[in-house]
Image 1: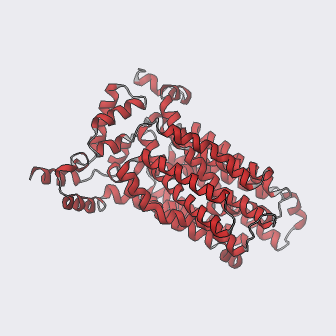
Image 2 (image 1 turned 30 degrees about the vertical axis):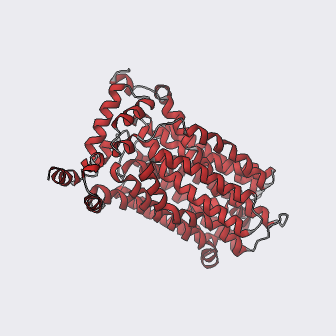
Image 3 (image 1 turned 45 degrees about the vertical axis):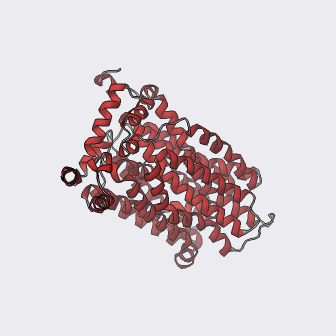
Length: 488
């Protein structure tokens, strides 16, 4: 075992070598994140090909908008259900069911022959995407050592970006059904690998299974003494009700849950996450992900829109890899605010460029700036993958209290995907009302608000354990309340 002083001087590669099962497990559970990326971006490929009129399925613009937005409807409808599954049966079980749901949704799309079938298939994919949100990042944070959590927390976005990049690459050269079918190979392999992993140690403790929790921690690269100490640390921030819940009646447990959701340790992180996730969805990302090919067409980009989409998503994947080396080294607030400022500049520039182009202002200069939309979107992907989006998603697994993580995750995710659906579904109206330049300016205004809000309220979680983070939000008073009821 390396000394504390030695551990402080370790590089990220050295730390990774000390925790091989944590790295491999994180990659395996985040294959479902890869499928989220495929789910989000495959619609641009599918709709683009359907518009060419060479498929058995014919669509109108209104029907195409339902194919796009049905993913978000699935997310909205399943958020509390998936959270309940994670709470009752554990994060690992939820992750396995997520993979199986992805498989069902993609098979419906692969063999679909109508707009209705495609829309239902994407609705199912939306439910699977919520299952990924409820299981992958929370489980990843629970088994990851604080030294490596900044890296493993980036794997979600790495695999998500890889899914987007790969589906554009395959979709540019293959029929869209073949392109989607190839992406199912890692999903099937991951599902088998999931059965080799151990369940969430925190969930096992909530079920009173202390020995299994210790075995789980030891599986994830802890020594016997480290596992025992970590279990003690987890119990310090968990309420007594969690691991002695059988001593309470159902009515008492329900009362305690009602008290719990009013606790500052639950309310403060929930309110913060709700605000940042709503604004994240209205900061351009659903629009760009779902309409990337159309954006390049609308801004009269000089190259093939599909090829440009490959370049843009490849840059995002590269940035997500770089984030694994950057996030462990610097305070997260600084990275987040820097990336938000870059995002603000890019969105404002895109809006201004589109305005000048539409109104034919300075055409002699604009002809030399035809590369600007691609460059701006690449920079947007770079900055968001390193800071803006990545850190927001990482905070979901970090700042929600352990005893109510599934419930809190369900609540904040519901708000997020209501915002995402409203954003995507209102795109035709916003484009007609504001124009594409006004839409980009609207996005830049939202990012400006985010910068102000994060400056005031964003917590710093760099290299803190989950227990330390939770204590910073205030220790729950439930422990005292529960002890009184147990002693009664």
